[in-house]
Amino acid sequence: MYVGRDMTELGMISIKQWKDSELSHFHHSFQQILPFLNSEGQSTYREILEEIEVRGGMKRNEADYTHGTETITD
Image (cartoon, rainbow, N blue to C red; front, top):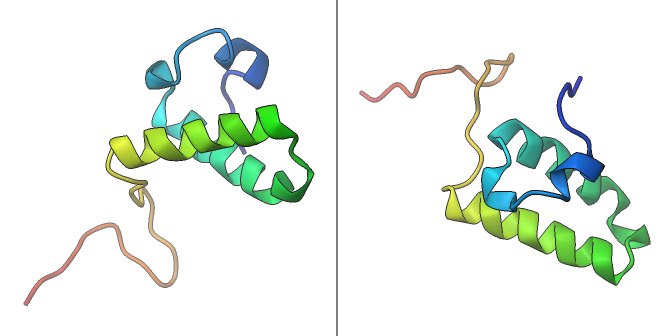
């Protein structure tokens, strides 16, 4: 569950100041409602995607049953 600043607060600061967890949460949220976004929402979503790309993409921070937390090379 996401615990952090809401979109109202984040809208008042530069997207470059957002935490990775905030980018990740709102990327997922916007992805779910993409067909319903107006032009302003689509613009915000595009900014989120661009910032994620600038930061080098999203990295996996936790393990699940198919992925570990470390990359193992032979």
